[in-house]
Image 1: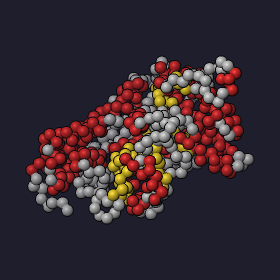
Image 2 (image 1 turned 45 degrees about the horizontal axis):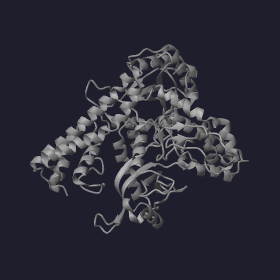
Image 3 (image 1 turned 45 degrees about the vertical axis):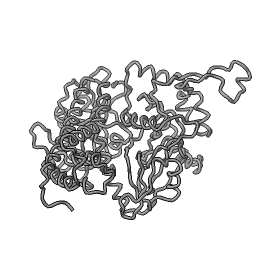
Image 4 (image 1 turned 90 degrees about the horizontal axis):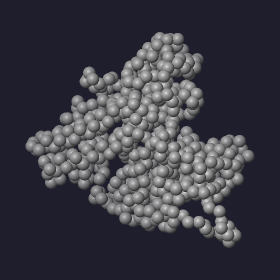
Length: 602
């Protein structure tokens, strides 16, 4: 129970210091996001990627600063629990008129758990549920733009004028190559998409006021409304080969928006006074996407983790199936389990790695952090990292508990931590990812159905082509997957192939791609062992084939579309391109969505 009177003299000071810490965090976060506009206008792609990477560390830095202040000024770790109960009540009062209350709650939780060494949500000193509503929040600051703006064409013929006003409102300080041309093509695409619909009195285009920046692109996001129809819309803006701006594509519908906001892509930089209003708008465009994933896509990954964990606890309460060892080939580095009714997998690092793996726990964690900070180009699944996570023991199969205790005993504790008679499985360090269908299992389903069946054959061909495309997209982003076996890739709901096993990834530019040297003697040629010297970063693409292409049908499709992956020259050429400073375009949409011929843009 909370005290009825707020009489601890230091409680308000602590609450105010914590809110000051959060406000500093969001002020810096927002300022860095706002600077993305200038970097885009100046085509500072290296600076954009650096800023995206460095911004990820902002949150933990501010939490550490706040903890240090509270310990120095208030000796916070020595205060009795009734004081912390009052701190929370004061903090709630500070959030009432706040524009980011949900983020401030999460910041409070992060700071409090570090000071009190609380590791899970079941206590009175953090926010298990939201205390302040974010409904209908809007900034009163005249310098802040409204969350979204509405434009009213009146008719399809008047679309160009409305689009002209819409683009001009962005106030981009860089010239367009031919804005009238782009708007004419975009308006024509819109007319095609709206054909057959009756335009009602409420016909309008609503767009979020701030552009979404990522890598070399800026994205205008909104929707077209007529009657009861709402059509999600996104318009990418890029630089042309001549260095001027171009409206590059027209994305329509929920599926196109899912591709743009995929969990396998880097976080956006977008200036938001009221992030919950942006999330509300975006969730209306993509109702199937969890709000936590939308927060993460906007760079607010800690809030994404908070919402995920709340959803997870809610799901546990309303389900009864058991956690199990995840289907598929077991890895040598990670243990993976899942809950069949929940669309995520849980991964932890083994305590020891059998041969031929030569790595350490610290190195594996560093690889996952590399992926978190890198451009994932739609081909590497994002991960959420948690420490000291408690699961109800009754929901774990005995086989799973035995597996965990056998291979990661240093990471597992089975105990009654809360003293309530209910045992828990406590995992010290954990990664959580979206569940995908392992590519090897997907292929096996095609084989089992029979490749003489047109659908099975088409699915096999599509995923083999997608597998090669995934590797090439990773290469374009300076990533060498390392272990390229089919089992380390998965198939998304939309049929996209995504990589998810990171313990052997390297920067492409750190690898040495070589051709296999010719045998010097007949004995060497006939030997089952390698006869050439191999350095620690040497890679021989010619050796990929025997491991990957054992099935004749798979081999045929792969060689037809991706034979260059088996040649050192392909890898060496991309290394040279990256070393020369060229950043390759990997667009988050199908080429059919583009408004112009590919030669127009860089």
